[in-house]
Image (cartoon, rainbow, N blue to C red; front, side, top):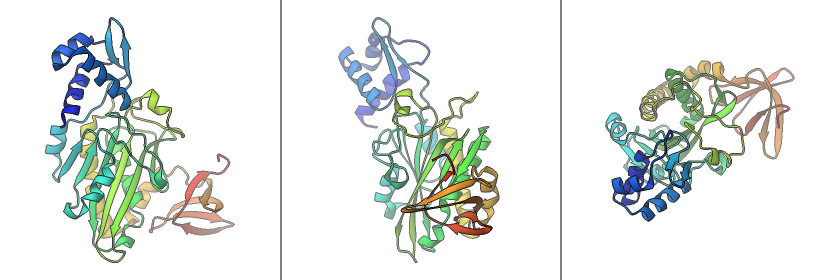
Length: 320
């Protein structure tokens, strides 16, 4: 841990979301001047942490901050776990080191300065509020063997969240997880290698735990998080469980393909039997969604004929 983050994490541990903590007390505990404490508080706000400041009272978090327990995390994962307080992108880190990795190795961060979603979209990544991680996996059958993999990962996330009592879950083809019809989690899979030979997969995922109000203003679509649950899952335990589920499902996928995951996908498919529009620039296709096929394509029924499509994005007809 850098000195930069060691001081900040000490300050975070002294802050509470129920009461104010004086700047003087923080300064004494951390061994800094009041000015240095003020600077760190300002920087934490830049990292997406909402902190109230009241003269004469001190500082208070706007809501509880669900941080990883780094020691439990690293010791609880059988494979290598690379943990960062701050990183540009967990996906980018694994891609840069793919030649040194084994299947199951994982990179986890509290903050991403350049988090990405599909098609280069920004993934809002405030410090400590959510789960940001990337898993490395090697497939020996080439890139074609990875077709439909994003659907498997989505099923893994749903399966894990269910064990923590999360309800109202849904899946949107090809790689989004929803809660109460609003986006809860996303997936970004990146590949390197030869199309017919050994293929390196970096499987990035983000799950919203507790969205800060100021960060929510940066998101241009309906979103959800887990903060409304009666008991929010412990973030460290959630990640440990997800890592195990991902490894289990990836091994199953390598042997049996997507077929075993289709029933679970259909159970949570938000668009099944609904009229949708599939946008594949510059054209679009309208039809009734009939689920997914064994290659991971979305099946559309138009004039009684069912056709599977691999690319594009879907939306409910009439909600564009």
